[in-house]
Image 1 (cartoon, protein in one colour):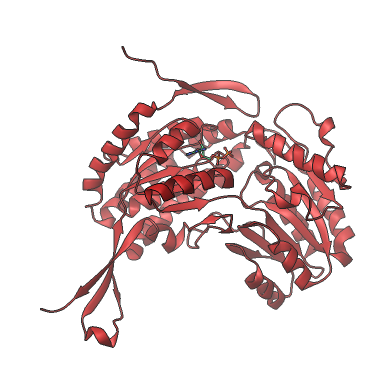
Image 2 (cartoon, helix red, strand yellow):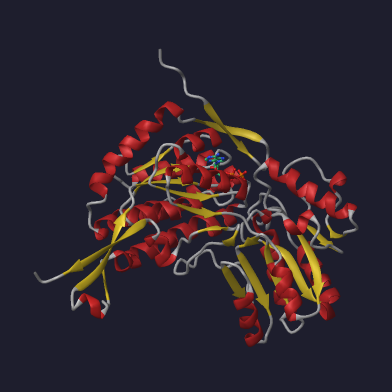
Length: 466
Ligand code: ADP
């Protein structure tokens, strides 16, 4: 007897309405997925890089032709404002594919290296060999690009891919599946498995050759443990508690705009959100006023002219609530927003600014992933570097000052995967630079050369003329 598949409910977070359902992938299918993927790998890995990039070009065209529709799916599944879905999720993915199409061949081609005198003139090369079947497990906050960019990077490098998208945004996962099928990829090269963490766990246990995971530190640690038992390499793109540092000599109006954007875009549900704001003491009060003015001008909602959409994942609201309650109970002061007991039901949280906070509070130690920003004064360069580095995370940071030497000095002392000077959040669209974290923000890099080569093992070849 054929058993009907379990259904994944599609809930629009902004309204709480169920807007569809998607068949969950039965765990009994895991082996079939891997068999299909390995079968497809035999041919896909044999194509020239240029042939694989031709497929990616077709994919890019299909996405460009349908980007309005794709953005609508993203906006519905996440509660993002439509323009944000288009500009910050769909378009960076197109740009990422474009970058790989332009530079992939150069990065992945066999590379000659200088030999030592001991090799007596023998030629030496590195060849970039695909790893096999890559399992991509993706999150809900930028559900399109955080799935699409690792997938296309793995494909360009000659791997086949199984995607397990987040169950919180299942329609986006379905949409990705449809786009690959419309672009005419050979059967089995990209497969999408729908479901929650049980499905994810079943696939991580199914002997992939590489796992590329984006999500929480908690789940990242579980995945790393499962991977270690099978001796499978991983990339882990995890959370952040990014510091933004504003010196008195910065362009304060610009910095205040940058802070409002970096803290509240996507309702703060960005791994690279500004999550701690350090302001030099002598401009602390004037900067706070500028920031509050910027925030009061932001419009929350789902209309096309809104600036900030809804939260996506209900459990995240509880985390933000607990952090704020903890801080307020220890003497923190609300400069904007409301105390949790006055929050309305639903998925829109007040845009919140908190002062009188310290590093013992949960709000400073843990990732918030919500529309909340603590502001802390500092007096010296050394002090602010120590404060910024006092975190288990190390993803991104920004430094705001007109003194470029000071900015560079500080940038090199921050233990983070990236630093931006006089701007907020490293541009997601900068596909030429490696992206990833230090400390518990993750392991490995993607984007740029590193992002293609990570999906390969390097084979050393030494050649004598015989
Ligand atoms: P969040 O808690 O914010 O949803 P997670 O890190 O738990 O973030 O989820 C990110 C992705 O990891 C999702 O696709 C989710 O289904 C998947 N996932 C969660 N737990 C596991 C697990 N134990 N094994 C494999 N995948 C998992």
